[in-house]
Length: 243
Image (tube, rainbow, N blue to C red; front, side, top):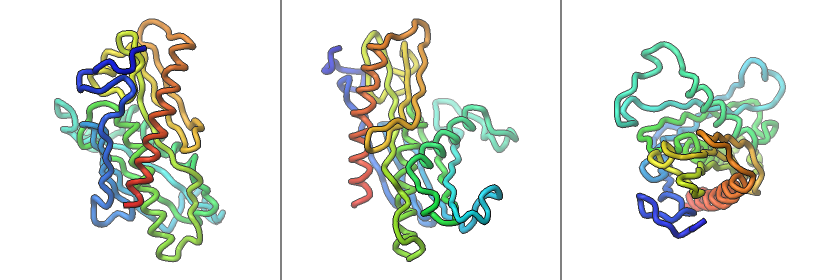
C-alpha cells in the first residue's frame, strides 16, 4: 500500500479531511457544534430535558438518544423532507439509532440522573461520511451539555466514561483509504464505518464488499486506518472542548 499516493483532493491514503468543530454554534441548545469533515457539515445540538422515557421513570437513571436528518438541499439534488412525506426513511432510522447507541456506550446513565439528553444531528451539506461526522460531532455537543450541567450544580461529576468518534474507510482501486468522501465511497470495492472509543475499543463496525469479498489482510488494514483516524479525532474533540 502506497500511503503517500495522492487522492483527488490532494490527500494521502492515511490523511483525514480537514476536521473542524465550531462550538456554541447555536444560541439556545445546552450543547451545540457545527462539525465539518471536509465538505460534509453537520449541525449537532444537545438538549437537556428533566424527564426520561416511560420505561425509565422512577429508576433514577438517565437517557441519551439522537435524531438525524438531512436537509433537503444537502446533496446535489433536492430531497423531500421526511416530515412532508409523513414517515422516517429506513436509512434515517438506522443512522439515528447508531448515533444513540454510540453515545450511550460511553455514558454512565446512573450518574446522569433522571434526565434525558437528546442530540439532533442535521446534515446541512453532504460529501460522504455523514453518519461518522454526526457521531463525532454529537460527542462534542453532549460533552458541552454535560459541562453545563456540572457548572449549574445539577451534576456532581461527569457521567462521560470516555470519548467516542467514528470514521469511514474504504478500499478504492485496491488501496485502503482513510475518511473516504462521496466520490471515493461511490466507487469503493469495500466500505466500512467504525465507531471507536478514546481507549481504542469498538462500539460498532459496519462493513460491506460491493462485488468481490475482502480478505482478512484487507480488513486488518482498514481496522488499522480506523483506529489511527479515530485516535486523531479524539484529540481534535478534546482540543475543541478546551477552547
